[in-house]
Image (cartoon, rainbow, N blue to C red):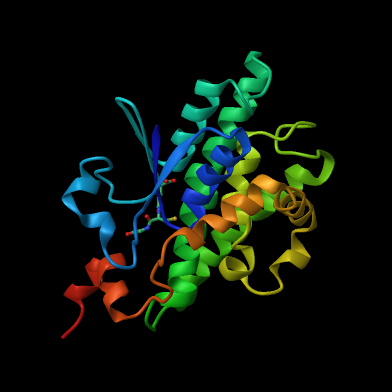
Amino acid sequence: MIKFYFHPSPNPAKVALFLEETGLPYELVPVDTRQGDQHADGFTALNPNAKVPVLVDGDATVFDSNAILLYLAEKTGRFLPPDTPADRAAMLSWLMFVATGIGPYSGQCVHFRHYAPEPKEYPLNRYDFEAWRHWKILDAHLADRAYMLGDDYGLVDMAVWGWAGRVPYILGEHAWEQLPHLKRLFDTIQARPAAQRADALKQRHAFKPVVDDEARKVLFPQNARLAG
Ligand SMILES: N[C@@H](CCC(=O)N[C@@H](CS)C(=O)NCC(=O)O)C(=O)O
């Protein structure tokens, strides 16, 4: 059976949604990143990048959330666009836009908005600007289509959903007012039973609820050099 290494955070959420949409049987393996589980030898043997999600399917090990989405879509033949060069090009472009733009800039924006010590005006200004710029590109793209690739819900929408749930935390509490098309997509996906089931996975394990000093040490180990 598929093993899904999970923490209730944006990148694993995308994969949780795909698994719940397809009904593929899987075993949930909690990785409490606030307790440092991602640095355990057994886990880094699966993902040398020490981050969730990871999927183990027989002798196949896949890490990086968008790679996992593509792997599962190709395995099941589900949630892929029509097999034409133009449709596949659009799918790859937007999937990689989420992987290399939305995710990393949103993650850094969260870091500087919520976790970094002062002075942070310069990095917050940069990452807030870049995160907004990426989210506004998605919003404009969604102005005249129901889903990321047109009329049909698919794996790119799932990749967007994983991060979209955190938009007010990433960009500020009134951010949705400036992203109406994205909000419409998010609400549409959020209403799906599979999204409710994916959200509920966090209740399957007593994940550490706070980012305290101990959690900061395992999440941001580079900061130890700055202390004292
Ligand atoms: N590019 C990776 C990024 C994965 C990632 O950043 N995962 C976060 C949770 S959303 C994590 O494991 N954080 C713990 C850490 O950085 O130590 C992906 O898309 O899967």
